[in-house]
Image (cartoon, rainbow, N blue to C red; front, top):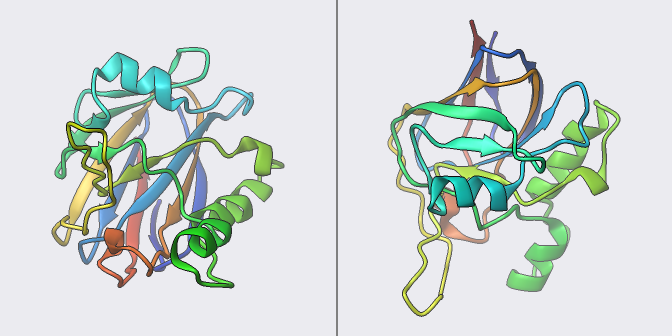
Length: 194
């Protein structure tokens, strides 16, 4: 299954254990917000602290595992052309866009997550801190952090192997108020194989 996800749009799908989920930044410089859940029991979901503790870093790449809240592997990164995907920036939203940038009626990834999750009977309580593929949030030695401009080249990919039957939820980030997409959201490709 190969799908083009338009700029700013949500996507969700079930990835069976052993299958690969490949996400391609088609035009480059596009952030992709990502959540995942145990497809059979979505109360078990991606857990950023477990993932970062096991990885020993806040920047994910090949070999790192996305762990659940009960410390079970959901996905393993098996191929990564980018290196250093963000785990701390979270998702943008209409409320955070108002808070940070003073703009009204500017929906973001949180709203996309809500749309995608609704198709699976899930909602606001099921949104947790997410992974941001192809996005960098450098952290300085004094603890300062800021979203950096998008630098992924066209065609950049990350491939994840499902370690359980997993629900994958994507927001192809619509953000135009910070540089994560270089102020120009673009389409991505999503493919499930195996």
